[in-house]
Length: 240
Image (cartoon, rainbow, N blue to C red; front, side, top):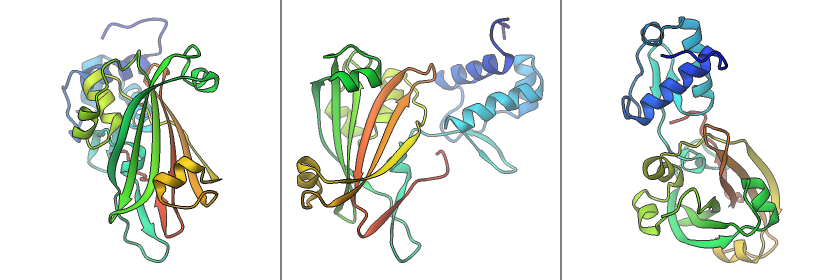
């Protein structure tokens, strides 16, 4: 590993590990070599390797199994990793996805500012429904710049079962970090009410996220509306 004086060693190791993952050296759910082995490979201490891996675990690229090792995480997105639980009971259910559409829209001032674009820039708008046992429980709208993802196809999104995060990685080489999730209680607007089969102004749980790539560039803005009158949403604590 060539050492760049301007960059901390652990950041160089982080980048080397990312490059190896991107090159397919370690597949999803495959264990990385031990920290001492990685230290010898990169010519750094075990502590430096651990610091780099800690960052990648926190970012959702890797995950650890206590006493077993460090593994490459999958690309399941936040909502698909979670589960819906009855308000009384413990057995959760993973949601299924129904893709509604993928169309081009133009960014208004607020979205352009969030995604670091000029006003009027072309965005892809992808909408999908979440279902549990056939019942509609959620709606998600995802927006991403056409300039970064120029050939998005609804057929391809369907092939990947609506998993946009996996598509970004497989087809465009863009690995997304899990962004901070913000929750708030809102009332259903006309669009949400129609698609979620409920009345306007009924309460919903809204989840807002901004996913960035590993260079810190904003890539995907997501807003989800969940019906929680019968089922609670529980995010996954494991990055797989």
